[in-house]
Length: 208
Image (cartoon, rainbow, N blue to C red):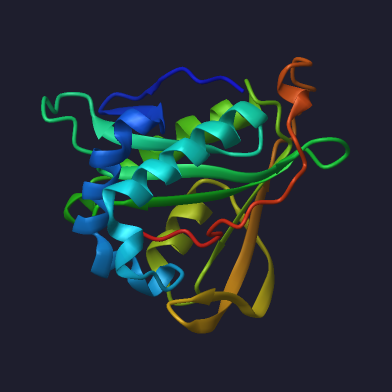
């Protein structure tokens, strides 16, 4: 899977690596309360540097195996290189499915500036182009109106409603199921088509 940078007018999207662990952790700590209702319940150990390094290592392994890709968002003009968001393609399946789950989040202090849409438009283009995927699925809580509006603007269509779908913050939560298909799909190069179909235990909600 392509491991290069993705660039927008304002953002740099880089695939997560062990060198990003401290900045990634800082992003998670700043947004701990913001993301808590939309995430699995996490203990203090999750928010340690060692755990962040392990997650970064796992992200690299998943990328190399073609199972998933996690991009960390930074402002191109930020000398401090702070992580201000993330986008993930997880549970990538090849063969007759050619699909993945899309998840994303933006720093609570950066909301309302169109950064999520800017990043997602590029990731979708990359997923349907370079990665050769045919279908992206993005699921959200019914009350997550920000994600609902954004996904609609990006062309995602509601396909269903799943009661008690994910265990988030200790509670089984209903989810709206949406998807976007590429009408101009063409098979990716053979290297991209070698991705594993092994599912991952990853968040499928789209917090903002």
